[in-house]
Length: 98
Length: 98
DNA sequence: CAGCTATTTGTTCATTTAGCCAAATAGGCA
DNA sequence: TGCCTATTTGGCTAAATGAACAAATAGCTG
Image 1: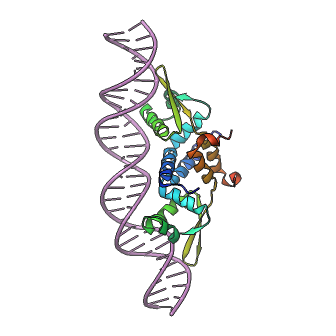
Image 2: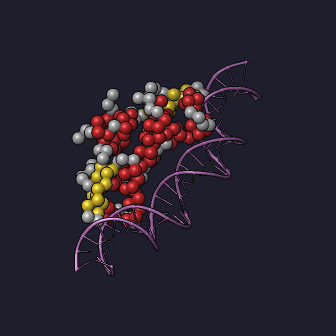
């Protein structure tokens, strides 16, 4: 699994996108199904513009998808394996798969 | 899997530690077994002090272990599930495990 | 002990990021 | 069309990060 320079850049950007507790929260919320910006904003103590930017960061690396219906934008999780990895982070020993 | 605020902070710091292509490279190299700072520095186009700081970042969140032997410090990977996750990042669809 | 090698840490500078507010955009609906 | 709601984007400031060089530390070895 020797990754190329481009692959490493991509991976680093992917991790960067997850490197914020608000974005982790968003990912966890989307595990239950899609949500619009307004729903997420209601759960997060921050401006809607801030939440929108967090979502843009996640979308930019393909972690979430967005679909516009009426005048709302719904975001959904596109990379559910993040959820597995979150478990591994908190319990590394139990998750060895080699 | 509703995480607590502290868990999310921890996860975010974990991802932050991986959010740099040099640190991804280090993790990949350590997949083959432990390496000392000088070996890693020889592979990376950066100052040894920079590599040492990258290793400190990884160690700080428990991604790597270090053990000093003679006057060298050897680093080893403590969270191998990162390697699985790297694969998932590049091929999300193939890795659904639900 | 003195000198050498490996590593870490202090300092500084440039770049990036997060947040808010305000303004712009887009899609209903009267 | 004109208003209202939902969302994104521009502009700004404060804080965090990454890198290099130099200095400090730690452990050999003569």
